[in-house]
Amino acid sequence: MMEKQFEYMDILKAIADDTRMAILQSLKSGPLTVSDIEKITGKSHSTTSQQLKSMLNVNLVTFRKVGTQKFYQIRDNQIFDMLESISSYLSTSEVISTTKGEKVRKILLMGLDNSGKTSILLSFLGNKNLVSFMSQNLKPTNGKKHMSEILADLKLESKIQPECVYFEYGGQVVFREEFKKDPISILRGFDKIIYVIDIQDDKRYEESINYLKEIANCLENISPSYEMDIFLHKFDPNIDINKKYSQPTINEKVIGRIKQIIPVGFKNTVYKTTIYTVFRKSLIMQTYHAM
Image 1: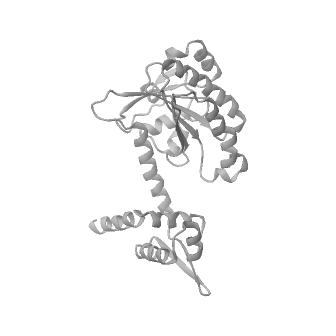
Image 2: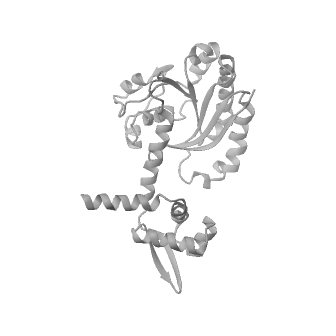
Image 3: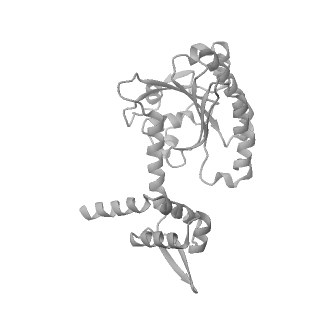
């Protein structure tokens, strides 16, 4: 057991370096020469060679010779699953963390129907296995529901003790119409809104952004310094290979539009998120429009 522990430590030490992590990411697409890696990472030949030697020593990478050249490659792509898990842990802790002694924060998830709000909420509550979400036959959320109601409906339990209280508001047309009638009663009392946009549902971008605009305008009346996170969800691995989900397209059709509608005074953070394997989010944009 102790021997295994040392192996774990060796692997963790091997990736706990900016240069080695950059090399690891560069090799994700396939075997490369030292020269190829240098061009991608921007590191010198001596630095790249030295770090590759360290990674070879812990069996993180291997190489094969073709003529006079060495082509380096990842020994086992499971290393990226481990990195995904670490990223998932950090991502979730960023969302739910709070300082001890403070009042419990209340967070409301909103967005169109089918955008993935329930799956995200379940991730926050420790249910990280995508297969479990699929097997539960998730149903649309009716109105505003406390996290305990959603878990009870799905016959699930929270896997962790959350430091925040989560609610979800259904995104079907009927509930969006109800929101228009009395938005203040639905939004008041929350410390943060998480708005979810299904990035794969490109036909509904405008519909989703218009709903976001309605919510943002209402929040401005409650508090001009309101905090909102926007999740560009279902940003699954390699999805941006498809031109309609490429970064320039998303910048034009989604992020650019978000910038136009966020009111002055809003603290607004945009993330790419996915539950392709486990929940993960990565920062895209953080803005604060001063008064």
